Image 1 (cartoon, rainbow, N blue to C red):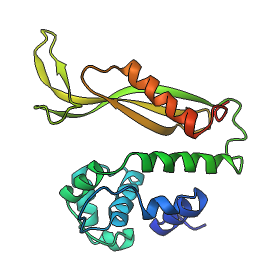
Image 2 (image 1 turned 90 degrees about the vertical axis):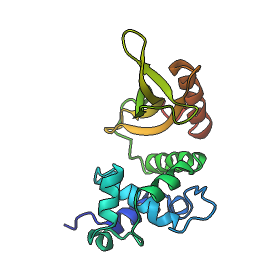
Image 3 (image 1 turned 180 degrees about the horizontal axis):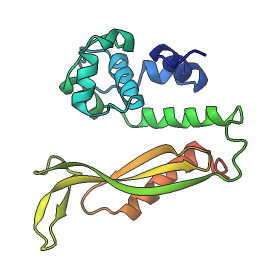
Length: 199
């Protein structure tokens, strides 16, 4: 039996989940990117599969001899990856996730699931000592002293399929709340997936 390879992963994403257009155009917002978005996206997807999502681990892989077997056309460091991900249009990967989930449901990949539902969960990410953007929220000591800043977000997942499938995330900054972000987040799948998708 043949094992997984980077080429087979790409073929599955392109044909099995109908993501060919997303792989070609992931919503790159860079004005003058020297490294093709396909190389950066390919490395990010393979890094997530290998659980090498840290900047240093990703740079080590794409700058090593493994890059050729990994089928990433160019080596790059932390800065291009950060510049690329910061400027991605979020609407494009959101639509790609909707396409993939619809494609998985068509051949009845979820037919053995007795119940499917959507779940919301709050989380945090990206700690820093100083405020770096408008969405940075302070986290405090028990005496209310500010210790640093982080980002808060709500994630929406599809449950009951045998896997937990993340569908979308909604960040919220100071003056906003997890409840409000969750309400905003629930409106999108109703529009894109259809109200009866998880019924």
